Amino acid sequence: MATFFNQLSFFSVKMKNSQVAGIGGSVAILIVIASGFIPAVSVTSATPVSSAYTQVVYNTSVSTVTGQSNSTQTTQVYNVSSYPISTGGCFHQAAQLSVGMNVSVTWNAVDTVDVYVFTSSQYSSYSCGSSPAASVANQLDTASGILEIRVSASDTYHVVVHNGHTGVGVMGGTVELNRLSGIVSSTQTVTYSSYVTYTQTATATLTTTTTSTSTGEIGFWQWLFGQH
Image (tube, rainbow, N blue to C red; front, side, top):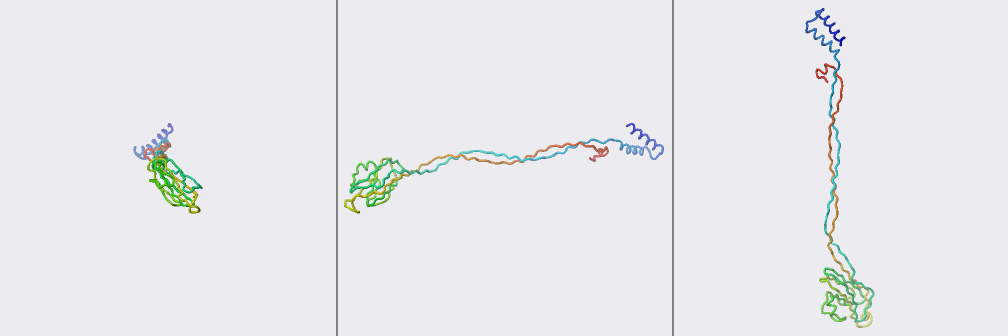
């Protein structure tokens, strides 16, 4: 700094002696000369920097779905094969049936027969070979057929196959019952529950801002007049 002021004094004296200008000119020249000796100014600047990232969110929920469906079940309650029925004789089979059941009775014989379905009270009053007073269903003088009934009351139901032939040979004598079958079908309402999983996806973009700070030096007059 001593050198700086000595130089200022030297140039000031020189200007005064040479009378180049007035006091104002002398000050201006001093400022110009002094500018070379003023140190640089330290400036700090802050710059905001933005960054973004994506976040994925999964939301899962479980719910119960309840419903009803009809289920049909079948059961064989009457069953016989290759059974010989003598002249004037009967074949008989019984099964316990419940109200609401649907029963399908089918048969096949080598000759014609009479087929009856009785309740327990009807069967107790029936005599093989006689004409029954009542029956749930019947089909007479046929070698094969089907009887469809719906059980109106829970009871023991009897199937009777009567061989009404009295002669000898194909049209009379023993009749072979090839097959007799009774199928019960019932429909029940079944309640079920199932679990359903739902997954929802949400996407969000998040932005964050940070500030970056830097420090540098600029000239005094650049700093003074805002040129930075």
